[in-house]
Every structure is written in C-alpha cells, then in structure tokens.
Image 1 (cartoon, one colour):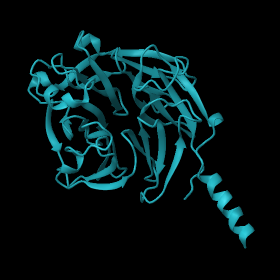
Image 2: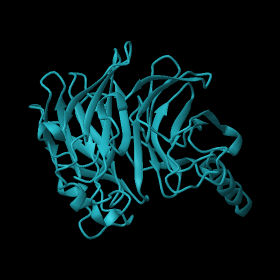
Image 3: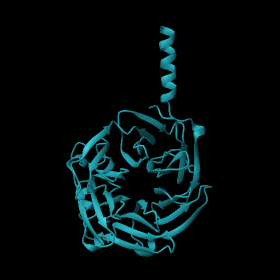
Length: 335
C-alpha cells in the first residue's frame, strides 16, 4: 500500500511539473521589446514593439517584417505601444499610452493618479492600422477629450466594437471605431486595489479576452492579482464583475482557448499558467528556471504551442535572449 501511494504521488508530481526547457524556444528577436501579440491566422503573429511604435509581422519561420509605424501619427511622443488585436480582416487595433513629463508613471508607480490628470498628454488612446497599406489612424485619443490613462489591451468583438483595458484608470473602455467614440464600459470596484495592492503596483485590469460566445469579458488584474469575469448584458452593458481565480503575482497577458481554458502570464515571477475552464485547476507551463521567459506580457496560440512576448521589464533575460517571442509546447492537460 505504501509503495503504491508513493508511486502515485511521484506520477502526480511528474505530471504537475512545468514543461522542460527543451519544450521552449525563441521564435524571433527584435531591436526593441515586444509587447502585444496576436495570431495572424496563417501560423505567424502580429507584434507591437514597446518603445519604437513599430508593428511587426512574424512568420512561423521566425522571420519578421515591419507593417506599420505608429510614429507616423504619434510623432516623437514618449510612451508605450502596448497591446493589439486583429479584426480577422485588414485591421489591427493598437493601444498607445503616452507618458507624462511632469509625473513619470509608470516609471514611478506612486504617481499613477497624478499622471492620468496631466492635460498635456494627448496621444494616449486606440489606433487603427490597415495591414494592406500600413496606414495608421487614431480612432479615439485624449486629444478627443477622452480621459484615457494607460490604455493597455484591446479585444475586438464580433460586432466590430473594441474593448480596451485601462491599467491606471482601473477600468475597461468600449470603443465604437465607426463612430470614433468611447465610453467607460466597466469601472467595477473589483478592479481597484485601493491602498491594498498586493503586487506593489496601484493598477487595475491588464490583459482582456472575450468568451467564445461573446457573453463575457475576462481580464487579469495587477494590483490585487486575479482572473476576473465581467458579464456582457443583453443590451451590451457590463454586469457586475466576479473573481474567478487568485493566488498569483502581477499579471499581464490573457487568452482563452476553444474549450474555455485560460492562459495567463505573470510579469514579476516570469511564469506562464494554464487554468481550467471551471478555474478549479491550474498548470504551470513555464518559469524562468527552465524556459527563456522574462516578464512575459501578451500571449497567443500557435500550432500546438503557446507563445509570449518577453517584455523583460525587470531585466530577467540576458541580451542574447531578450527582446524576444518565446514559444512552448502545450503540455498534456492534467484534467
């Protein structure tokens, strides 16, 4: 009996282990830190570069090419080119967050509130990239009067509307690209860490993703790290948010697979997790001890693998592995 129990315990511990280092590879590297990532539907990816504002396309062979440059519209504005999403046609939506010269958030985390009140910041918002031409156009920005603070991650809905998380406003916007209008769709109290931030960062929702049936929006939070669900009511309004899972560090990226399982990235611990659709089970897919992971940001699915952008915000990775997209095999599920 004791031997059987020990054998079972060993097998379970082996199954629960993350993928081995050999299961992870560097797909592509850039001359700038990649942040946003989405599949291009052809085995490759669209990627945003954090500082330069370049929008890249990476083939499944790892070769990259530039398809657009946000600098053609935002000029020399200093800020972060953050998440992006693709409408499955000819349009990529990209979030850009301009920095305040007076209150340098996010460089100084305690100045988030002051920075978002800086009226001289006008470029923060959502931008549209036409893939076939490379043309960049603003959709909605602070210059239009909208109080975007740190627009972070867009998610395109089936009706063409675009949800955009706002990290320091601790809210989710809903943008109508056709009307070039925006509304604060959800500013649920669950998003705000108040003075109780567990990660050390006074931030709200980061990565977001829609459910397959379009009836829910999911998000990961950074201040009090959680996986949350916001119901989408029949009239399109936001329902009351609910916590689905917790017990993580500062989270960034989020994706949902066809079975409803969640894939999350943690920046401070440089970990990648899979969480079951019922959120009762979780499996670590990668950590920096056995995979080239450095503050992984956005996450996307490839052919039998999951890929992340290494923002390397905390300098985890050496130069030969930094500024990269890392891909790991999708481990056999434990459930």
